[in-house]
Length: 207
Image (cartoon, rainbow, N blue to C red; front, side):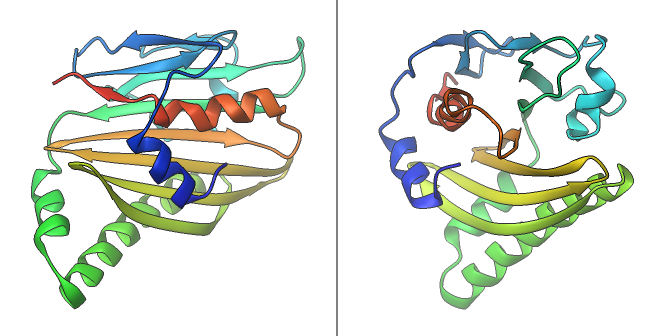
């Protein structure tokens, strides 16, 4: 995935990626350019790939009412999944945290940022430990993009079947939180990596 600085620049000057179709979320609050050619599912997902994908995404836990979009590619029947993404949206509950992060200064801002990142990372560690996976954080940066705050996290995952990469791009927008999580490997095709990189850049807030 691209570095935090590159992604921050792209968030401010995003453009529709080739091979992507803009999709309006059913809540009407945002739209994303979902990549074409991927398998897609929503909250009612019950297909044969559910167990495999649920191992990597807690958005598929029971009663995952925040799940908006789920996508994955599969090169051939019976083959492993080299890339997947999950979009979750929580319409309210983070406004206070966002205000503290924006309005604090100096050491207080550093401490507030550190606490926010630590809480988010701890939740991910717990989710993956419950799934029998080890997560090692590579980087975590909280940036300002216009009126939004954006957390960009890169991590590695280890399982009995191999190693994976996990990224999260988390937007704090007014009182809402939107997360775009992605899973990929060293064998993920370049075109799929480009589509994963383009996904958070395509976000448009409608309300």
